[in-house]
Length: 425
Ligand code: SPQ
Image (cartoon, rainbow, N blue to C red; front, side, top):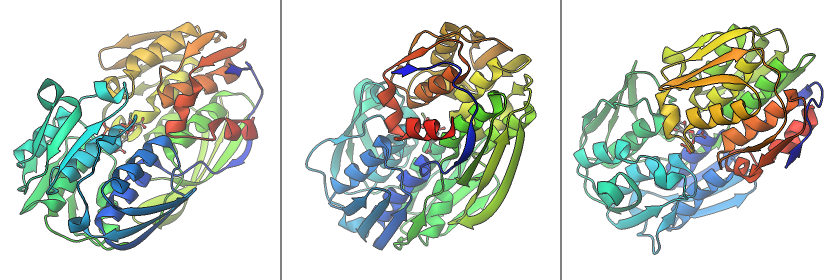
């Protein structure tokens, strides 16, 4: 795809599509619940469609009309053994959360994914699930997909995840919902808490005290209505664009402002952009509001510590911003980036270097020197939606045309991305 360089300022208002993390969880919990669940502003992206397909394969009636999804839940005991292996596509969230559910259901299932997902570590979730009594096997002793699960009666555990991962926390909590006794997860750093919030919206009791989350097993869920807020991870690309293209000012409405996700706003502000954030409501335990961002001269900063899990998926766009910020930006404590759809430390560094940036990858992050004018050339998304969107935004400050290879990867989380970008530019 050809992307013209220096296309001008961004102006106007936009609502971005529904949050990916919340959309996945609404289908999972709606499928385990008794009664009807109606989801509005559902993210109609490939990852969330993989979650719908997985539960349809287990006999759940799910109707979808674009952004509206209706699930006729019959309760956990009505889920059926899938006839065929379940294809998770590119979705790490579906893989890790679904493993937590399947581990405790009384049947056999097999999971596989695309080339990228097949390389991502699953032992981070299969290890604690095995401690709960799960029987899961697969390649490299069950570290990688494809994986086969023989569901068991699980027993609650107390788990201290060695990695900062909402997917691990969520997979263990979902297994805990099906297990005997209480399951406790104690995190080192707080990660996104949509699972905890949504379990409560479906009527489950979850005890959250700081970094400790407890759930009693064998609770039943009741179908409900879920309004999915706009995805801040998608909004982040336009926030980054407006912060870096001189003369820009944009407003994004009805976007999720859950504090476990808003690290990017803290960072963009600390870099010097003009930002206004107005909370308008709280729906299903999730804060929602309006963000206005306006260009201002940017400066380099250090991005490290507890903010990292709060913006893990926004680090590629933050790295691009840093190329347009005066001085040095250091990203640390972000080793988890190596286990995403691509090794995002390597792919961000490769792509931005190709575009002319001064960027050095490190073990757990990167060091970026700005301000650097970017040039146009051919660059690969490497099949990673967030790298594809970062490249499209980079083209706005590139002096020549950029040719983006494999732009379709973006459909995983943001179908309609280019239409929305064109509305603003
Ligand atoms: O689902 P997937 O492929 O893992 O998606 C990503 C993304 O960029 O969209 C990560 F590659 O988001 C994860 C995120 O990084 C979604 C997620 C969730 O919904 O729980 C949690 C984060 O992953 P993790 O490993 O920190 O739990």
